[in-house]
Structure formats: C-alpha cells, structure tokens
Length: 124
Image (tube, one colour):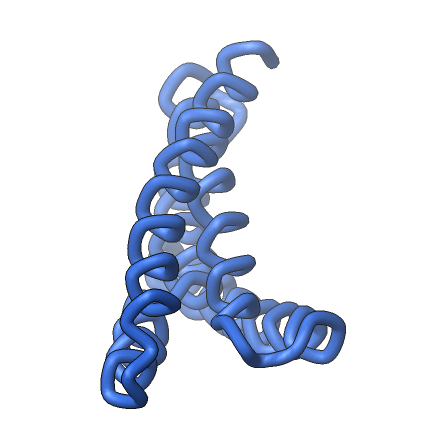
C-alpha cells in the first residue's frame, strides 16, 4: 500500500511540476517549437537515469520510493502523449521540418540526458 501512496503523491507533484515548468518555458521562449514539452522530457530523462542508477546501487532509496519517484513523479512530469500530439499538429500544419527536428532532437537529447543521469549517479 505504501508504494501506491508514493505513486499517487509523487504523481500529483510531477503533474504540477510539468504544468508550471512547461508553462514557464513557453512564457520565456514562445510556442513556435514545443519547448515546454521538450524541457520536461529532457529533465525527466536525466532524472530517470540518475534515480534508477543510484537507487539500484544504493540502499538509501527504498524500492517503494524508487517506484514512487519513477512511475509517480516522472510519469507525471514527462509526457509522451503531449509530445506525440504536438508533433502530429506540426505535421498537420505542414511543418515537416519542425516536426522532424522535434522527433530527432527529443529522442537523441533524451537518450543523452538519460546517460548523463546514469553517469552522475555513478559519480555519487
């Protein structure tokens, strides 16, 4: 039951962080490119690498907390569905280049940031 509570609490926090962080990014740089979604997904990629690597190598993070942080918080923070929708809308609007850049940079940059998170956890 503790795991379910962690998922719920951290999931709500992740959703709120996504809402405020992506909104803040859009306020700063505009909406010509899905920067807000890009930002939360990059942050989430880094954090999942960091959390998983650290928690699997250490006893400081319980399995319940790890699940709460990854499934709950990061599940609420990151968003593949918004990424898909925004990319689809770009394609529908004839913005093939921007849609392609969104897909390629999102996948590649998120992989790099996951690796950076893992590397950071190994350094700790």
